[in-house]
Length: 178
Image (cartoon, rainbow, N blue to C red):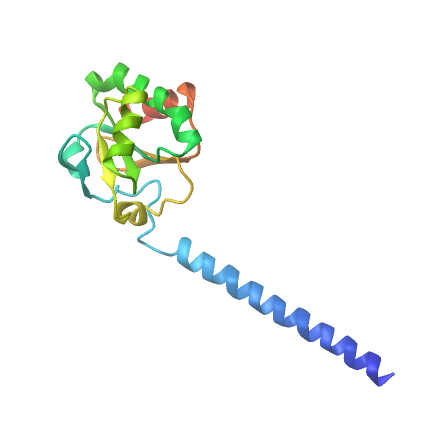
């Protein structure tokens, strides 16, 4: 009988310990994401940065103030990135004269790999090189593609994680061009 009670008590203790660990994990996640003032999120000003362009001098995000910016984090190996690239190019071609700038931020790849990709997909918008992942970390990029829609005042209107199509990009661009 005492052996059964000890087993039962151990089970309750184990459940209590697991519960405390789970609560600690939830609190840690909440604290790091929700309360962190450095988290880049919609409604905040987009953090400024400077990165070298694939075919040109360094570009600062702050230099684009007054324009609507689509800031797209991508990689040549990323299938959803490949799929959405023509739609981003189409929006850029159609609306660059109305103040839209599409900026691709390549995550950690060599210029040779990127140049081949850019040529294959006929990309003409600026491609920035985040070789050391400094900006990727600053913006807390997880899955790619991740796209930030930044209004003319430099405020992030929306963050979209995943592959976009023409309709999605068009609707979100319309919001930042207003």
